[in-house]
Length: 93
Image 1 (tube, rainbow, N blue to C red):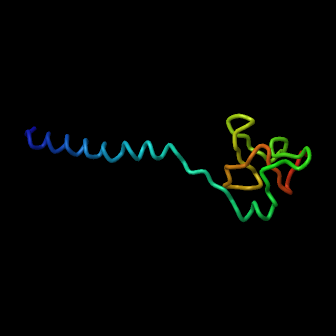
Image 2: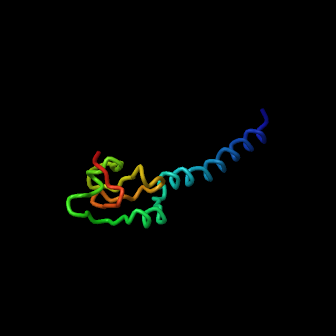
Image 3: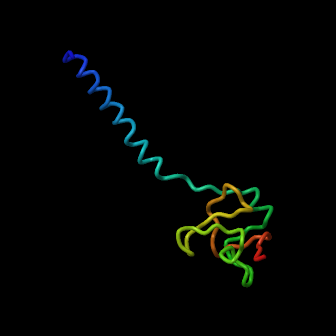
């Protein structure tokens, strides 16, 4: 193999790595999403209504802990649901 060819491959690999490394780290920080239209329709609020809160609802998808934001089966694509929140679809059955 010629020295020129080896150098070209090396430069190609290095330049590819320089581009891919930042993309890898940026992809690890996914942006949180909310479904504002459906939140408004269901009258979602970040505070409980009496003893009714998302943490005790069957539709709630918990976060890593009981204090972390989670998701909801009724609000698809929304991953910022407070465990202490409430909406009109609150359900325990």
